[in-house]
Every structure is written in C-alpha cells, then in structure tokens.
Length: 357
Image (tube, rainbow, N blue to C red; front, side):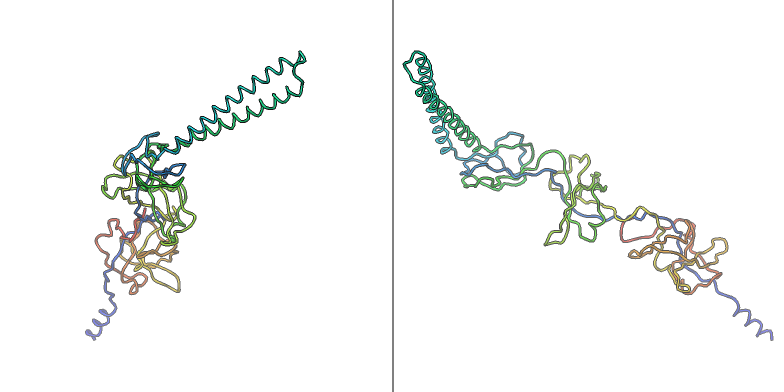
C-alpha cells in the first residue's frame, strides 16, 4: 500500500518544463530597404552645333570643368565667311539703290510744283523708293543670318559644369544638333536608382532617404525622392527613381556609388513576435504568456497584421514588457509551470532579415 501511494504521488507531479521566451516590445510598421545608385547632376545636357560642318578643333576632354561661355569646339567656317561677305555686299548694294531711289524721289517732288514733272513720275519714284527700302530690309536680314551662322561655328557652354563624355572628335563631320559632349551642370546633385516594381508602389515624391557613400561609410547625407519614372524599363523591368541630395558633401562626386535607404510601410506600431510563438486554440491565433512571479503560463488570443520572414506582426492582445514563450508552445497548457530563461529580465531583441524602425 505504501508503494502504491508513492507511485500515485509521482504520477500526479508535473515536471517544470524549460522554455524559450522573449519580452515583447513595439516597433514601427516601416521597413527599410537598401538600394545602390550613382551620383548624377540634376541637370545634364548634350551640347551640339546648330549647323552642320566639319569639326576642326575640340578644346575640352572628359573630366574637364568648363565655365559658362567657354569655347568647347569649333567648325570649319570658310564657307560661312564667304556667305557672310556675300550677304554684306548685297546689303551694301541695297543701301546704294535705296539712296539713288530716295534722291530721284526728292527731285521729282521738287520739280512737280513747277510743272516740270508730272504726278505719275512722282508716283513711280515713290514706288521705286519703297521697293528699295524693302530690298534693303531683306538684305540686312540675310546678312544677320549669315553672321549668326558664322557664330554658330563656335560651340560654347551655356552653363558651368563638368564634361562627363566626349561624343565627337576633330575632323568629324557632324549634322546640326548632333551632341559633341555631355555636360553635367554644376549645382544640385541627385542619386539615380533602379527600383523593382514590387517596391516602387510604396514610394512617393518627397519621401525621405538616407544616403551613404560606398567608398566611405562615414560620408552620409539626407535626400528626398524628386522623380519616379512612370514606366518600367523594358529590359530590367525596374523603375528609374531620382533622389535629390540635400547639401551634398564635397566628397560626393559625380559617378560615385551611393547606398540609399528607403522606408516602406505605414507608421503604425506593432508588436513583433517570432513565428515559433504562434499557436492555434479553438481555431484562433494565440500565444502563451508567462507570469514572471509564478512562472506559470496562460494562453492569450491575439490579432495579427501580416507575416514577415521570421516573425508575425501582432496588432492586439499583447502588452509591452510581457513575457511570451517562443519555443515548445505545443506542449503547454493553461496554468502550467515552466522554467523561464535568465535573460527575460532584460529586453530581448529579435533579429529580422530587414532593417526596421
């Protein structure tokens, strides 16, 4: 009888089960993703001649800094000079014809009151004068056009900047409008990114970004999204995004690689809990919460708001600083005694695959 009583006492005792646990805390609903991009000028242009011709001289190379009005390249202007001289001669001839016509009209008007010149002659002289004035205006316009054409043989920078590419060489015949160089204008800089379509839907114009220079992690800057392409690139299926840099450091030079951190999601707070803490009780999502004083666990029904790679977002059901069991929940029952890990007295951190704030 004594042996039987001892056996019943041993069977009635429940072992204290060791468990894993964390102290829950709240996080923002935003997730950070990092993209790589390169620094570019806010304004880039491809200057070219306004007329066709043969380049006889190019005065800048890739990497050169140019000032506004600086000469970039020059065309062969031999034919342009001939056209200008011809237009000048035609203009001088038109001036002479106008002078002769004006003198003839003046004499006719002087002799008409005395009866020496009929009115029809005066009208004819007036007609010739008007025609000479029109011819002179046309000749002057042609001369100005020829002079402008000669000036177009000189390609000058319309703004200060840096030459990022050379697209024509001396001796090459170029058509009007063909780019000779590519010029990155001085001033504002921005970062060019390529963002996948699943991420671009979470971006908005004006959204803040954190920028870090790849060559030197200590060089950082703030930025904001200034442009989002309306159509994906047909080859990469990504969208071009531009981030304007606020007060860029001098060490952030054109062409350098930059890591840009962009935040996705809402600002609503949530409580992250590892997936291993989740269980189902009567078809409802629940976790087991442990009492620090008694080391007993009890189920707690929760509402979730999405699943991350290794955690679930809990909207309601948990309070900050509560202890949640994260391992072996399938063996727990209400009121069961457990042995908590020593580190539950300190706020535990959960490692996720993406940066959060």
